Length: 247
Image (tube, rainbow, N blue to C red; front, side, top):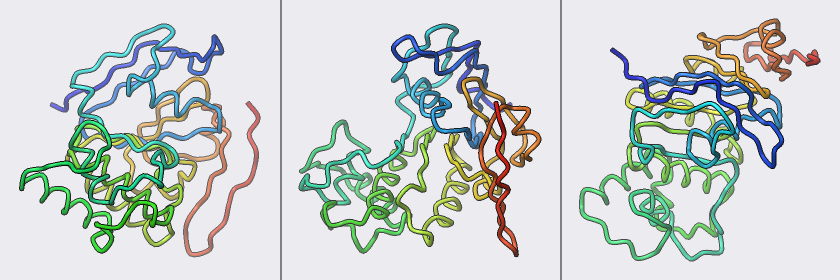
């Protein structure tokens, strides 16, 4: 039987008394791969922060059936000061230790794990390079490696394709599909057309939350779910469906 990891029951969240999430119900299971979509300001990042324990529910409850320390997190944007004198290897290694610091002493097993993950994200040739010398995409890959180096039970990614070059974008999603064999993944994205072959289900977030059990969703379903986003389809003749939904 697949284990339930998180249960949200009629959960609401607010910032400065302004409601952001309302009456959210969601169950997350082991090895789920949920694509989270919705308009800007709809509450996607707040949902992630509630799961991470960074935002407390205003009402309702969230129940965990695993240790929250087993969550890997890649936030939106780069959160590291690139002037800090630290290498790619040290940043990734900090995912196995508390705090971001230089001079981390690791045993042979951890050093091997760090090297393997750096290779996995395609940065083997840059492992000793200072983060200040990296491109935006290379830094994003470094932070992804940091998020997965501990082999977390759940991986949460807030628009991970930000700054990532187009070549690595498809590699990223293939990597996430491979990681999903051993961990639950929650992925925020604006591009449902790109992520749909990789995810297993969809959560539409726009104040409330509608859970869709398939990885495919159409314009009419988005309208019913009050989820006014642009659908981008990928095929022999690329095209976009530009019609705007009104809440």
